[in-house]
Image (cartoon, rainbow, N blue to C red; front, side):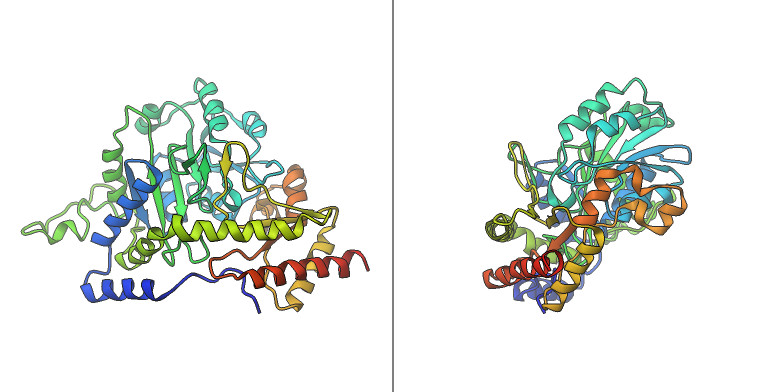
Length: 402
């Protein structure tokens, strides 16, 4: 069976983790701080806070910004549940809008969804393709007079917060610059299946405009990530520095040095090996599948942006959801693993019960009912790519052409 997305774990990672274990420092410490610094350098921003997941990091930001019941946050209907769940955890309301044919949030729909209750927009870089952040920032600027702040931080920002769900797009490009500096906050995921993994983990890129001091925001978020404690474990190792205070009822979402040691190895080879190989895999799929009129290939590059090549979101032209599911079944029968990204939020029981309806988001509905995600990972061979593509072609013929 060809797996869908195994992590890339080799001896260099095993040695790095072993070194960290032998160092006696396994929680947040020097490796985590080094990882933060190198992610910041990669993204060309000043400050990054490493956390234990995208979810924890993004929810931390909503609490920090003072999101509360009565607030509205705009998100695409086509995303993983975490994007919406963090809003629910804050007691706020997810306002879902449709996406466009490239799976990115529909800017025109965002414009129509903004109200005086809108406090944030969370666009999602599905599959690794960055959304149009320039257009979103323009919409936010044009609606700054509508924004009604509820606290000092919101007053200081003076506009709707743009929080990028970049869980898929580490290494994605906009105008030849890496994702990370196009929103007020950008949050990455380093989960096991992501391009760059730390097993579990994430990172917050801090990019607030003046008059915010991003170094002070980093310090504040670091405190919030450690139950509101004014000193982390590394700081308390200094002579006589045991004493600390707790200045807010924070959360617990710090990254550990064990996770960071994996990330440091991954980051070292990310541009020179991982991104290059993932792009080659996508191009190999394209070479085979573009010969078939029914195969709708994913957008991975255009005039101003380039994907991180996290997912290969193939769509089957004109098929029904039952036909799509039958194709997937037949592919698995050929010992090839595929997936679907994602069931849109209104298709999930929890959000159905809140009153969201799939028919309100026709593009999202069309995309998900025809989408099949093909394997993309570093160790995937050219031979396996051909086997996967042929399994899709044969399964299509067996389902649609029979």
